Amino acid sequence: MGVGVSIFFLTLGAILRFAIEPDVFGDSVHMDVIGLIFMIVGGVGVVLSIVLAPRRGQTSEGRLMHRENHPPEI
Image 1 (tube, rainbow, N blue to C red):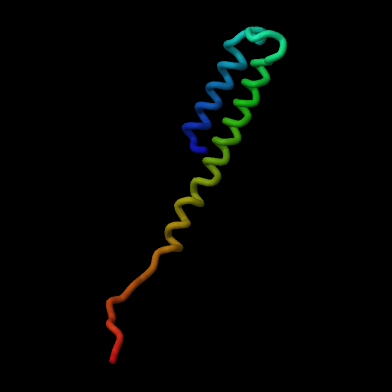
Image 2 (tube, one colour):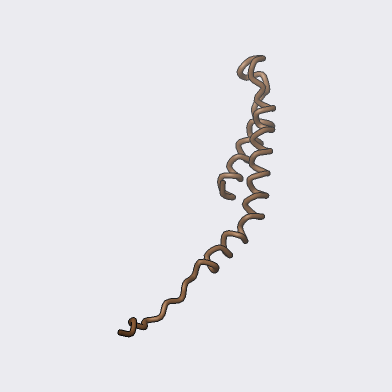
């Protein structure tokens, strides 16, 4: 999950938590709790994206191979 998707979840969670009345869908669905869950998932996604971003850049350097153009001697 990238930073963009995480920010989307944060925004969606904030809308569900603060902008919609909790009893819109009746007593069986708690929109404020669902919004809080989306906000938590978005926050964790942002943190993980920032923490794991430097590791993605370092993996390509270890895979670089050096080849020389020397034909085998007969």
